[in-house]
Length: 372
Image (cartoon, rainbow, N blue to C red):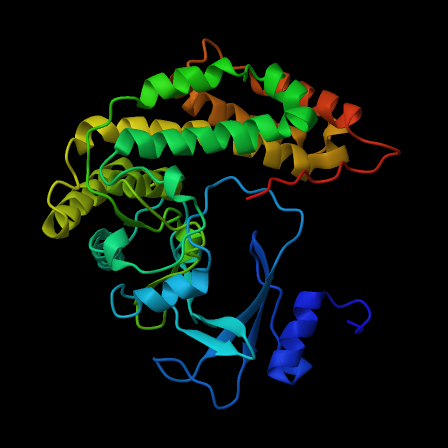
């Protein structure tokens, strides 16, 4: 790659490392363009280390609220409190996270497969460690306004802010571009009223730190079978049950292990935050319902953008995308109050119509931006 064609992120990585031949990347990732670089003479707490040099991607879709101003600042504050948190090092004002050498949990044990007991125990330990961290004991700058932070234990207020973000920043913000596609799939303003009714009436639980994105690609297993947790960018303070709901929704455990993990979560949270699991059996389904509803709006946008002009061809990737969206809609039918769900063929036709209406001169549509 010539210097003229290199991205600013790669140029920065080369500058930091001092040797272009040692730069690895870009790594797979949504929010950042990331490269891995060695820094001679700079090791992490666990010894010799490589470091992640990254830059935020432009023109991004943000589907989740962000709470903390700096992921690196949060990681520094969690050292010694959360097991398996990457080191942070700063060079010339640029914060770098240690690159965890290992494989993602998803690579080793893909979605739908059981996770070995030893790793499940480490996940459960993580639940307990995050539950022990509260806003009072975490002095890290937050980006959300004080008036937008529900009072400790106000679980209804917490989930209302999540619903409001999805309604305003994902749905309403993208109506100009995706309104016809949303409508074709039976998604309208009334869906949020039905969603609010579905999640209303949660039991009060004391708040704590949440990673809020614990899926198999954010859990790294090193050579010693130790579990590391990366990508804390969506971390927030809130209802501890939301952590479990998000984790179960994203992990796709077999049903027997889902029950095992939920019970482990209950024990770990209660040990450090008495009352943190209050009413969890009654409320877990409501919060999982919110996650399923959120996935509908995010996945519709993502699939449409990913397909681009390919959606105009019946022999393209349209049918697999339509089948995926049909499954997502079916899973969310109850929380969104949908009387019926269009079939894959109908969804594929809607994607094709959207593509024809939003493609100029055969070029794929621009990616819409969702401001954080």
